Length: 330
Image (tube, rainbow, N blue to C red):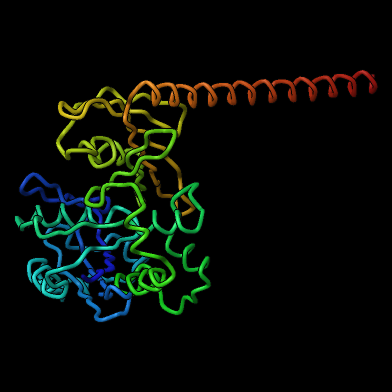
Protein backbone atom coordinates (compact mmCIF):
# COMPACT_ATOMS: atom_id res chain seq x y z
CA UNK A 1 0.00 0.00 0.00
CA UNK A 2 1.14 3.56 -0.78
CA UNK A 3 0.38 6.85 0.92
CA UNK A 4 -0.56 9.65 -1.49
CA UNK A 5 0.08 13.01 0.17
CA UNK A 6 -2.25 15.33 -1.72
CA UNK A 7 -2.53 19.10 -1.93
CA UNK A 8 -4.45 21.28 -4.37
CA UNK A 9 -5.00 24.93 -5.21
CA UNK A 10 -8.31 26.19 -6.51
CA UNK A 11 -9.71 29.36 -8.01
CA UNK A 12 -12.74 31.16 -6.60
CA UNK A 13 -15.22 33.59 -8.21
CA UNK A 14 -14.20 37.22 -8.26
CA UNK A 15 -16.62 40.07 -7.74
CA UNK A 16 -18.09 39.94 -11.25
CA UNK A 17 -17.71 36.20 -11.91
CA UNK A 18 -20.61 33.78 -12.22
CA UNK A 19 -19.81 30.14 -11.55
CA UNK A 20 -21.21 27.52 -13.92
CA UNK A 21 -23.48 24.77 -12.58
CA UNK A 22 -23.42 21.23 -13.95
CA UNK A 23 -24.54 17.84 -12.67
CA UNK A 24 -25.95 19.40 -9.50
CA UNK A 25 -22.68 21.22 -8.67
CA UNK A 26 -22.01 24.96 -8.85
CA UNK A 27 -18.31 25.53 -9.40
CA UNK A 28 -17.41 27.84 -6.50
CA UNK A 29 -13.96 26.27 -6.07
CA UNK A 30 -12.36 25.16 -9.35
CA UNK A 31 -9.13 23.16 -9.08
CA UNK A 32 -6.23 24.79 -10.95
CA UNK A 33 -3.25 22.86 -9.54
CA UNK A 34 -2.69 19.37 -8.15
CA UNK A 35 0.44 18.38 -6.25
CA UNK A 36 1.11 14.98 -4.71
CA UNK A 37 3.90 12.91 -3.19
CA UNK A 38 3.83 9.11 -3.15
CA UNK A 39 5.22 7.43 -0.03
CA UNK A 40 5.80 3.74 0.51
CA UNK A 41 4.58 1.96 3.64
CA UNK A 42 7.98 2.83 5.14
CA UNK A 43 7.39 6.52 4.31
CA UNK A 44 10.06 6.53 1.59
CA UNK A 45 9.30 8.98 -1.23
CA UNK A 46 8.82 7.05 -4.46
CA UNK A 47 7.33 9.67 -6.77
CA UNK A 48 5.86 13.15 -7.23
CA UNK A 49 2.99 14.50 -9.32
CA UNK A 50 2.23 18.07 -10.35
CA UNK A 51 0.07 19.74 -12.94
CA UNK A 52 -1.62 23.04 -13.76
CA UNK A 53 -5.23 22.69 -14.90
CA UNK A 54 -7.05 24.87 -17.40
CA UNK A 55 -10.40 25.85 -15.82
CA UNK A 56 -13.67 25.81 -17.72
CA UNK A 57 -15.83 27.82 -15.31
CA UNK A 58 -13.61 30.38 -13.55
CA UNK A 59 -11.32 31.18 -16.46
CA UNK A 60 -9.72 34.28 -14.90
CA UNK A 61 -7.70 34.17 -11.71
CA UNK A 62 -9.22 35.69 -8.61
CA UNK A 63 -6.91 38.57 -7.67
CA UNK A 64 -6.41 37.37 -4.09
CA UNK A 65 -5.80 33.75 -5.17
CA UNK A 66 -3.24 34.96 -7.72
CA UNK A 67 -1.37 36.87 -5.02
CA UNK A 68 -1.49 33.90 -2.66
CA UNK A 69 -0.40 31.18 -5.11
CA UNK A 70 1.51 33.03 -7.81
CA UNK A 71 -0.60 31.26 -10.45
CA UNK A 72 -1.44 33.62 -13.33
CA UNK A 73 -4.02 33.70 -16.13
CA UNK A 74 -1.26 32.80 -18.61
CA UNK A 75 -0.35 29.70 -16.58
CA UNK A 76 -3.87 28.31 -16.35
CA UNK A 77 -4.56 29.13 -20.00
CA UNK A 78 -1.70 26.75 -20.92
CA UNK A 79 -2.82 24.09 -18.44
CA UNK A 80 -4.18 20.67 -19.30
CA UNK A 81 -7.82 19.66 -19.07
CA UNK A 82 -9.22 18.44 -15.77
CA UNK A 83 -10.12 15.08 -17.33
CA UNK A 84 -6.54 14.56 -18.55
CA UNK A 85 -5.05 15.63 -15.22
CA UNK A 86 -7.27 13.25 -13.24
CA UNK A 87 -6.48 10.37 -15.60
CA UNK A 88 -2.73 10.92 -15.09
CA UNK A 89 -3.20 11.36 -11.34
CA UNK A 90 -5.04 8.04 -11.07
CA UNK A 91 -2.23 6.31 -12.98
CA UNK A 92 0.27 7.93 -10.60
CA UNK A 93 -1.62 6.71 -7.52
CA UNK A 94 -1.72 3.08 -8.64
CA UNK A 95 -4.10 0.43 -7.36
CA UNK A 96 -3.47 0.20 -3.61
CA UNK A 97 -3.28 3.54 -1.81
CA UNK A 98 -4.85 5.88 0.71
CA UNK A 99 -4.87 9.67 0.55
CA UNK A 100 -3.34 11.88 3.23
CA UNK A 101 -4.48 15.50 3.36
CA UNK A 102 -3.98 18.50 5.63
CA UNK A 103 -7.55 19.48 6.53
CA UNK A 104 -10.81 18.39 4.92
CA UNK A 105 -11.34 20.86 2.08
CA UNK A 106 -9.17 19.16 -0.56
CA UNK A 107 -11.22 15.94 -0.68
CA UNK A 108 -14.54 17.79 -0.58
CA UNK A 109 -13.48 20.04 -3.46
CA UNK A 110 -11.95 17.18 -5.44
CA UNK A 111 -15.26 15.29 -5.23
CA UNK A 112 -17.28 18.33 -6.28
CA UNK A 113 -14.97 18.95 -9.27
CA UNK A 114 -15.24 15.32 -10.33
CA UNK A 115 -19.03 15.51 -10.13
CA UNK A 116 -19.10 18.82 -12.06
CA UNK A 117 -17.18 17.18 -14.91
CA UNK A 118 -19.35 14.06 -14.78
CA UNK A 119 -16.44 11.86 -13.70
CA UNK A 120 -16.46 8.80 -11.47
CA UNK A 121 -15.80 9.34 -7.73
CA UNK A 122 -15.93 5.71 -6.62
CA UNK A 123 -12.18 5.23 -7.18
CA UNK A 124 -11.34 7.61 -4.33
CA UNK A 125 -10.02 5.53 -1.41
CA UNK A 126 -10.10 6.26 2.31
CA UNK A 127 -8.60 9.64 3.15
CA UNK A 128 -7.07 10.73 6.45
CA UNK A 129 -6.71 14.21 7.87
CA UNK A 130 -3.11 14.68 9.00
CA UNK A 131 -4.15 17.73 11.02
CA UNK A 132 -5.90 15.39 13.44
CA UNK A 133 -3.01 12.91 13.61
CA UNK A 134 -0.53 15.75 14.20
CA UNK A 135 -2.67 17.31 16.93
CA UNK A 136 -3.20 13.95 18.67
CA UNK A 137 0.40 12.79 18.59
CA UNK A 138 1.83 16.15 19.71
CA UNK A 139 -0.75 16.71 22.46
CA UNK A 140 -1.95 19.92 20.79
CA UNK A 141 -5.65 19.10 20.53
CA UNK A 142 -7.17 22.49 21.36
CA UNK A 143 -7.61 23.61 17.74
CA UNK A 144 -6.75 22.90 14.12
CA UNK A 145 -3.15 23.77 13.25
CA UNK A 146 -1.78 25.06 9.95
CA UNK A 147 0.89 23.26 7.95
CA UNK A 148 3.32 26.10 8.65
CA UNK A 149 2.74 25.60 12.40
CA UNK A 150 3.52 21.88 12.08
CA UNK A 151 6.70 22.65 10.11
CA UNK A 152 7.81 25.09 12.79
CA UNK A 153 6.92 22.59 15.53
CA UNK A 154 9.15 19.91 13.97
CA UNK A 155 11.84 22.48 13.10
CA UNK A 156 11.55 21.79 9.37
CA UNK A 157 13.10 24.64 7.43
CA UNK A 158 10.89 26.26 4.78
CA UNK A 159 12.97 26.92 1.67
CA UNK A 160 10.18 26.95 -0.92
CA UNK A 161 7.02 29.06 -1.14
CA UNK A 162 3.92 27.67 0.53
CA UNK A 163 0.54 27.72 -1.25
CA UNK A 164 2.06 25.90 -4.19
CA UNK A 165 0.40 22.49 -4.45
CA UNK A 166 3.57 20.45 -4.98
CA UNK A 167 5.60 22.42 -2.41
CA UNK A 168 2.82 21.97 0.17
CA UNK A 169 2.60 18.25 -0.60
CA UNK A 170 6.39 17.94 -0.23
CA UNK A 171 6.35 19.72 3.13
CA UNK A 172 3.37 17.68 4.30
CA UNK A 173 5.32 14.53 3.43
CA UNK A 174 8.16 15.82 5.64
CA UNK A 175 5.69 16.15 8.49
CA UNK A 176 4.57 12.57 7.80
CA UNK A 177 8.13 11.41 8.49
CA UNK A 178 7.76 12.74 12.05
CA UNK A 179 4.42 11.01 12.65
CA UNK A 180 3.44 7.41 13.30
CA UNK A 181 1.00 7.06 10.42
CA UNK A 182 -0.06 3.50 11.19
CA UNK A 183 -0.97 4.32 14.79
CA UNK A 184 -2.42 7.66 13.77
CA UNK A 185 -4.80 6.14 11.26
CA UNK A 186 -5.70 3.36 13.70
CA UNK A 187 -6.34 5.51 16.75
CA UNK A 188 -7.85 8.75 15.45
CA UNK A 189 -11.59 8.27 15.81
CA UNK A 190 -13.15 9.77 12.71
CA UNK A 191 -14.73 8.59 9.49
CA UNK A 192 -11.85 8.31 7.01
CA UNK A 193 -13.88 8.97 3.87
CA UNK A 194 -15.94 11.82 5.33
CA UNK A 195 -15.00 15.39 6.21
CA UNK A 196 -16.67 15.31 9.61
CA UNK A 197 -14.93 15.51 12.95
CA UNK A 198 -16.65 15.62 16.33
CA UNK A 199 -15.15 17.36 19.35
CA UNK A 200 -15.66 16.14 22.91
CA UNK A 201 -18.08 18.75 24.20
CA UNK A 202 -19.70 20.76 21.44
CA UNK A 203 -20.93 18.33 18.74
CA UNK A 204 -19.05 20.22 16.02
CA UNK A 205 -19.10 18.14 12.84
CA UNK A 206 -17.42 20.54 10.43
CA UNK A 207 -15.10 23.52 10.69
CA UNK A 208 -14.32 25.44 7.52
CA UNK A 209 -12.86 28.85 6.72
CA UNK A 210 -13.88 30.86 3.66
CA UNK A 211 -11.46 33.61 2.65
CA UNK A 212 -11.14 36.43 0.11
CA UNK A 213 -14.81 37.45 0.17
CA UNK A 214 -14.83 40.87 -1.40
CA UNK A 215 -18.07 42.27 0.04
CA UNK A 216 -20.11 41.44 3.10
CA UNK A 217 -23.22 41.00 0.91
CA UNK A 218 -21.42 38.27 -1.08
CA UNK A 219 -21.50 36.05 2.01
CA UNK A 220 -25.29 35.65 1.76
CA UNK A 221 -25.08 34.75 -1.94
CA UNK A 222 -22.62 31.90 -1.36
CA UNK A 223 -24.53 28.66 -0.93
CA UNK A 224 -21.50 26.81 0.43
CA UNK A 225 -21.49 29.23 3.37
CA UNK A 226 -25.17 29.81 4.20
CA UNK A 227 -26.84 26.73 2.63
CA UNK A 228 -24.37 23.83 2.94
CA UNK A 229 -25.47 20.26 2.29
CA UNK A 230 -25.99 17.82 5.12
CA UNK A 231 -22.60 17.04 6.68
CA UNK A 232 -23.56 13.38 7.12
CA UNK A 233 -25.27 12.31 3.89
CA UNK A 234 -24.44 15.17 1.51
CA UNK A 235 -28.08 15.86 0.60
CA UNK A 236 -29.76 19.28 0.53
CA UNK A 237 -31.32 20.56 3.77
CA UNK A 238 -34.06 23.02 4.66
CA UNK A 239 -33.04 26.19 6.49
CA UNK A 240 -34.65 28.56 8.97
CA UNK A 241 -34.21 32.31 8.70
CA UNK A 242 -30.67 33.35 9.79
CA UNK A 243 -30.50 34.78 13.31
CA UNK A 244 -27.95 37.51 13.87
CA UNK A 245 -26.12 37.50 17.18
CA UNK A 246 -24.42 40.85 17.19
CA UNK A 247 -22.69 42.25 14.12
CA UNK A 248 -20.25 39.42 13.40
CA UNK A 249 -22.06 36.16 14.23
CA UNK A 250 -25.00 34.40 12.59
CA UNK A 251 -26.80 31.16 13.52
CA UNK A 252 -28.81 29.22 10.91
CA UNK A 253 -30.85 26.22 12.02
CA UNK A 254 -31.21 23.53 9.35
CA UNK A 255 -32.89 20.16 8.95
CA UNK A 256 -32.07 17.01 6.95
CA UNK A 257 -34.88 14.50 6.47
CA UNK A 258 -32.45 11.63 6.93
CA UNK A 259 -30.04 12.89 9.62
CA UNK A 260 -32.03 15.39 11.68
CA UNK A 261 -31.30 18.90 12.91
CA UNK A 262 -28.11 20.94 12.61
CA UNK A 263 -26.96 24.45 13.51
CA UNK A 264 -24.75 26.39 11.11
CA UNK A 265 -22.71 28.99 13.01
CA UNK A 266 -20.98 31.69 10.98
CA UNK A 267 -18.30 33.92 12.50
CA UNK A 268 -17.53 36.84 10.20
CA UNK A 269 -14.33 38.88 10.27
CA UNK A 270 -12.92 41.76 8.27
CA UNK A 271 -9.33 41.32 7.10
CA UNK A 272 -6.52 43.89 6.84
CA UNK A 273 -6.86 43.58 3.04
CA UNK A 274 -10.44 44.96 3.35
CA UNK A 275 -11.99 41.63 2.43
CA UNK A 276 -14.05 39.33 4.64
CA UNK A 277 -13.51 35.83 5.97
CA UNK A 278 -16.06 33.46 7.49
CA UNK A 279 -15.47 30.65 9.95
CA UNK A 280 -18.25 28.09 9.48
CA UNK A 281 -19.08 25.51 12.13
CA UNK A 282 -21.85 22.92 11.76
CA UNK A 283 -23.24 21.36 14.95
CA UNK A 284 -25.43 18.32 15.49
CA UNK A 285 -28.34 20.08 17.13
CA UNK A 286 -29.23 17.84 20.06
CA UNK A 287 -30.16 19.10 23.53
CA UNK A 288 -26.52 19.33 24.63
CA UNK A 289 -25.62 21.45 21.61
CA UNK A 290 -28.65 23.70 22.11
CA UNK A 291 -27.64 24.26 25.72
CA UNK A 292 -24.04 24.93 24.71
CA UNK A 293 -24.97 27.42 21.98
CA UNK A 294 -27.51 29.15 24.19
CA UNK A 295 -24.83 29.44 26.87
CA UNK A 296 -22.44 31.06 24.39
CA UNK A 297 -25.19 33.47 23.36
CA UNK A 298 -25.86 34.39 27.00
CA UNK A 299 -22.15 34.91 27.67
CA UNK A 300 -21.86 37.22 24.67
CA UNK A 301 -24.90 39.16 25.85
CA UNK A 302 -23.50 39.46 29.38
CA UNK A 303 -20.13 40.62 28.06
CA UNK A 304 -21.88 43.22 25.97
CA UNK A 305 -23.90 44.44 28.97
CA UNK A 306 -20.80 44.53 31.15
CA UNK A 307 -18.94 46.46 28.49
CA UNK A 308 -21.83 48.93 28.17
CA UNK A 309 -21.98 49.40 31.94
CA UNK A 310 -18.22 49.93 32.13
CA UNK A 311 -18.41 52.50 29.35
CA UNK A 312 -21.29 54.30 31.09
CA UNK A 313 -19.40 54.29 34.38
CA UNK A 314 -16.31 55.67 32.66
CA UNK A 315 -18.40 58.36 30.98
CA UNK A 316 -20.02 59.26 34.33
CA UNK A 317 -16.60 59.58 35.97
CA UNK A 318 -15.36 61.78 33.13
CA UNK A 319 -18.50 63.95 33.42
CA UNK A 320 -18.05 64.25 37.20
CA UNK A 321 -14.39 65.24 36.81
CA UNK A 322 -15.34 67.80 34.20
CA UNK A 323 -18.03 69.26 36.51
CA UNK A 324 -15.52 69.50 39.39
CA UNK A 325 -13.05 71.27 37.14
CA UNK A 326 -15.76 73.69 36.06
CA UNK A 327 -16.72 74.38 39.70
CA UNK A 328 -13.05 75.02 40.57
CA UNK A 329 -12.77 77.48 37.70
CA UNK A 330 -15.88 79.32 38.89
